[in-house]
Length: 173
Image (cartoon, rainbow, N blue to C red; front, side, top):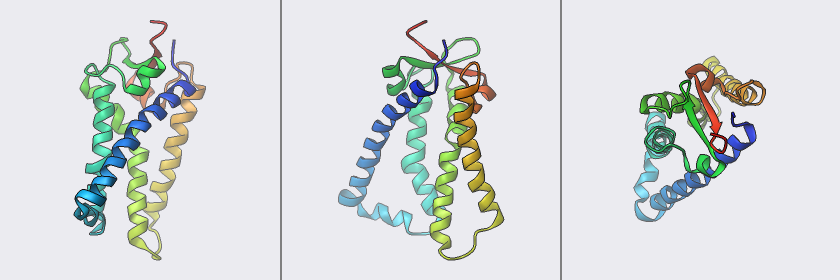
């Protein structure tokens, strides 16, 4: 049986408690132990984007890549909600499959980071046409991801459909 929107959302929320805890540790580290880390975000836009990627996006992505693969079997949130990600052979994902799935899954998140840094550094200057396109793509992708989980027969998001992966209930397997 395929996992629906609400169980997937709850699992993601549980995982986000871990992510926010990690982010809190990074914040406290950058304030009290190594304040020079804050300077990484005050330099060029590229340096700020790269720093954010290395400190937040990469560790969070690695968490989901390992957790949703054969190595971890399930993220902490998915384990609590009794769901897991499998491929079209009903097998746990390889590291490669989990990597591609995570990259596509978090594309709107990373694009949002890009836009946030872009707007901070632009100040009052006008946005470029590409910025509007990227901003629109963020919303289109999020809508598509959620819409497809809610309304497709197998409860697959866009990235699951693309990669032939499924989020399934483990209580019934």
